[in-house]
Image (cartoon, rainbow, N blue to C red; front, side, top):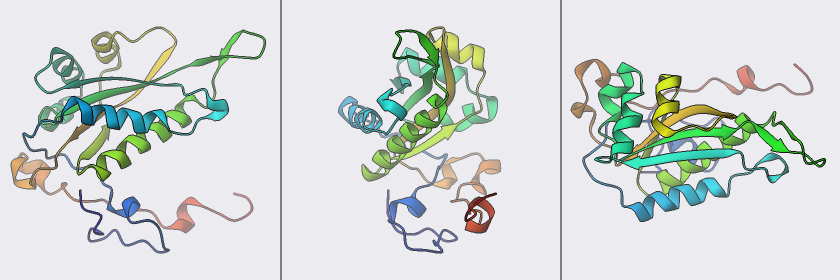
Length: 197
């Protein structure tokens, strides 16, 4: 993907270009993503930061045409099924809910979701650096997806990520074409304050 700044995504302050250039398209070409490239995406995930280095994220992935891909796809909400089946790879992203504490007891990991979000961002930026698009979805049937990926007890599903080469908006159903553009962002004043809330 290009690091050119899309219209409407001009930062108010200097940042590295990959941040405003990254967005989540829905249109994908039919280009396959080789397993070696999937491993690079997962390697980026592996190096994400995490509290006390617990690395709670767990991913299940499959490429288009594989049974695992079809199972993940069928667990998506209907609106996501329309376009996500054209992606080259689908990844279910989960986290382990507990960690082994210093006393050797499994205790809740209160930062598991936060850390897994960092892992997703690592995947998204790695995909972008490889000329690929990544789109995370929260629209899925939790029970169907858990069954599809064999989710172990003590784990939480967070999203499904579609990855592939970005396709043209015209390839989408008409009702999605108008949405196939980078979204804007809230102002800094809406998301951050100096000193206290």
